[in-house]
Amino acid sequence: MDSDESPTTLDRTAFVFPGQGSQRPGMGRAFDDAWPAMRSTFDEVDAAVDADLRDLCFDGTAETIRQPSVTQPLLLATGIATYEGITARFGVEPAAVAGHSLGHFTALAAAGAIAPEATVALTRERGRCMEAAADADGPGTMVAVLLADPDEVTDICATREDVGVALYNAPRQTVVSGTREAVAAVRETLDGRTRARFRELDVGAAFHSPVMASAVDCVEDAMAAVTLTEAEIPVVSDVSGETYTDPAVARRDLTTQVTSPVDWVTVVETLRDRGIERFVEFPPAGVLASLVDRIAPEADCVALETPADAREAFA
Image 1: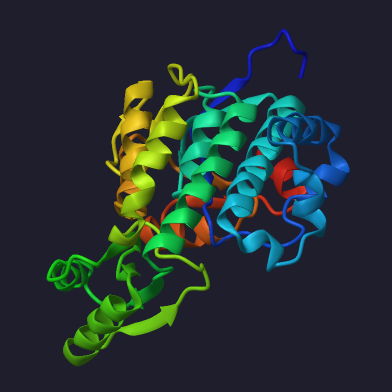
Image 2: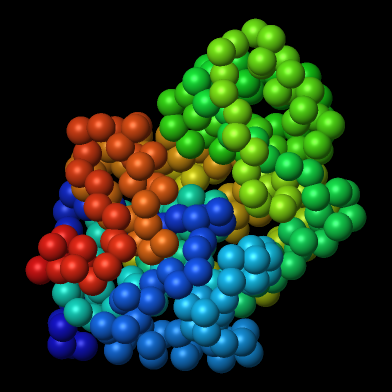
C-alpha cells in the first residue's frame, strides 16, 4: 500500500489478539520470513526494551518464553508486527479490535492509542510486576473448569477471598485462579456438586486473581508513565465489555484487569451486537478463534497462522 493512502476499513471484521498461555516457540516466524515490514517493526520494539525479541520469539525454548516479563513483550511484538505487516501489504484495517488479557495491550497498539515501542516496554514492566507479586504472595495456580455453569463457579469462588474466576472464556468454560489451597477447595466443591471437568494450566502464577493484588500499584505506575491517546479504531474492553476510544477507559481497565476476570464471552457478544461477522485472530493464532466459534458459531473465524491465511483473508 502507498504510504499516502488510507487503509480500507473492513466494515464487519474485528481483529483479535491472544494473551499469555497462547505463546509457543517460533510464533510468527512464517510471516517474518515472508514480510520485510515485520522485521522493521521487530527492530523498533527491540530497541525499546534493549532485547532481541525476534531471536527469543523464533529461537527461544518453551521454558525461556514462559516467564511473564518475557512472554508478554514477545506476544505484543508478534501481534503488532503481524498487524503492521498486514496493513502495509493489504491496506486494510478492522472495524473494531479486542484482545484477551495481554492481547488488550496489542489491540490498543493496533488501534493507534499507544506507540508499539511504548507498549512493548509497558508489557515487560507489567510482567515484572506480576512476577514480583507471585514471589511475594505465592505463585498460586489456575484451573480450567469445563461443563459447569459459570454462575455457580462464580458463587463458589465468592465464598473465599483468595480465589476468583479469572477468565470467562466460553459458555461453560471458566478458569479459576488463586492460592493453591483455595483453588483445590473450589475444585473439590464443584466436583461434589457438578459434573465439571478440570484442567490445570501451565502458567506459573495466579493471574487475574487476588494473589496479584500487590501488582496493581506497580502496573498503575507503569501505565502512568506512558502516553495514551484517543484510539483510532474502536476497542472492546475484555474487563468491562465497553466499546471505547477514550484513553481513560484503557488506563482504568488495564489496571483493574490485574485482579479482575477477563470476560471474553462478553467481548464476542458485544462485537456481534455491533454487526461484526468475521473475527480474525493474530499470531500466535488458534485459541481465540476456537473460543469465538463456541460463543458465536455463526461467525466466520480466521486464524492467521501463515501468510497464505492472510492472502486468503485480505487479498
